[in-house]
Amino acid sequence: MNIQQTSSSNVNENDNGSFIGINVPLLSNETFRQIREKRFSMFKPWSDFFDRNRISKPKDFSDITKRVSHNIVYFQANYLIIVLVLLIYIMITNLLLLISVVAIGAGFYYVSKLPSNEPVSFFGGMVVADQKKLYIILGILSVILFYLSSGGSALFWIVGVSSTIILIHASLLEPSIESEFAQTV
Image 1 (cartoon, rainbow, N blue to C red):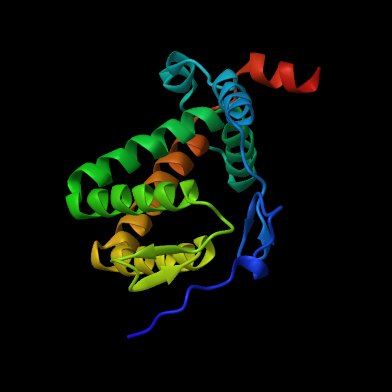
Image 2: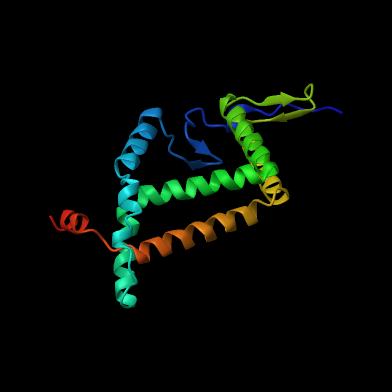
């Protein structure tokens, strides 16, 4: 079986951050650090988050919407922590999903380290593919592994449980006077 190596002339050499012809901005470590610092600076103390003195039944629907819109913005970093804890829980309880996510992540990391403008041969030259084709193959494998490891049900569970917890908390907790004052100033 004769396999020809593909030419790299159709691959743009200035293709940093391009994936299948779509420009994707690359996040540097500095940008990632700034995003992380901004998120953690928005983190509110758990004593404020679980303040039992401010928990009360809302008067009407407009009170619920006011509380939810305020608390979602005010406690967004805390709510993100809750979602991450639920994500860790579902990954630990669904071991096949955890293995699939780690394997796919390692695959994407490996492919990202390959040269983008040169074809790569696998299995002794029987399979030749460039970086973009490998990303497509990994994407297809990701969908298959996601399906086989019940990733869809895990995703719906995380969305359902976290949104229920967040909406109940946000609708029952009255906004603090300090936070309302800080928003008006």
